[in-house]
Image 1 (tube, helix red, strand yellow):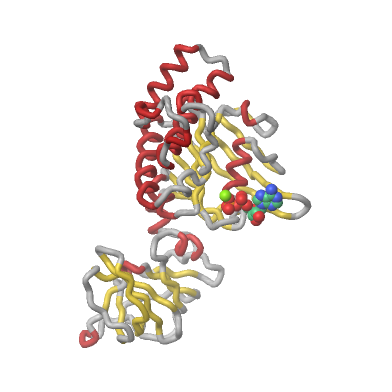
Image 2 (spheres, rainbow, N blue to C red):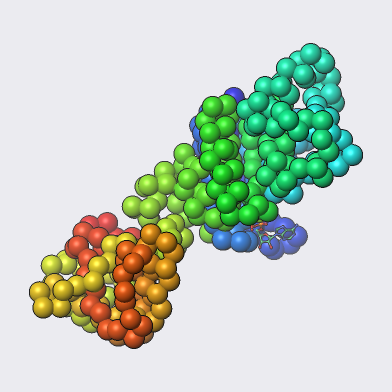
Length: 345
Ligand SMILES: Nc1ncnc2c1ncn2[C@@H]1O[C@H](COP(=O)(O)OP(=O)(O)O)[C@@H](O)[C@H]1O
Ligand SMILES: [Mg+2]
């Protein structure tokens, strides 16, 4: 078990591609950190620098109190799990699990013991004598996990391990990884572009934007107190609505004087009773209704042409083209300044 510290870590590819622009982060022993952000923001680069698969241009990476910048991947006591499982096709599952341990001259009975333990935890005991091609995608992903577990490393590093699986399996494996990581209490860094995966797996989330940390916090902190419009729209699905504060009534809402953008989550908008006059002034024309099961997402356009989304119960009947007035409780508004920073009121 181990802590991981990143101190002003930088990565420049070639002469001038600044992929990581100074990242500092302290990861606690046993913690599950999820690095999340859009494609190209630098997640894999950062993870690969921790793993030793990419050289570090600047700053320090420390694992279990040891500066590892100059160490080979094999010397860092970490195990990586990728989306392409990287299993040896000609070996059985058992041989795949044993391979890394044999290379480290682990005694045979210890190897057997660890394989039995991991296979039981991952429910892959019936497949130990099969080859990878005789397994489903989900089973292969479990073997890849197993290979990391049997090593008993100081830390697990995951790079989008579930992105090759279908939606249902992805949810199932997500729950399993969460359970395993908790029971093993091994320090982990998990990279994903999927905010739902990030929210459900993380002890703390790190939102990366163009090579910099945008915000660090627990999933609920980031959801309820996003520091910027970037985090506000990245975390939560459908995304938070952002609007210009111009126009409309300002009933019951104290707008800060420096507000440039208003934010409101789709779940906080409700259809106003026009006769009660309790709307906040957003008149919306319904453009499309997406039924997703228990609820529907209504997509509309405001008078100033902004797109807006809100949620209604799944069986609601809302005709396309209908003009509606929306409202929300005054405390459900977010305010952002002209730099996209949230104004705390
Ligand atoms: N080997 C490389 N050479 C040059 N540029 C790279 C290399 N690997 C990644 N990059 C660039 O660095 C940035 C971050 O990439 P990456 O870490 O793969 O992002 P993510 O994993 O978040 O999608 C991107 O702009 C990407 O094009
Ligand atoms: Mg990547």
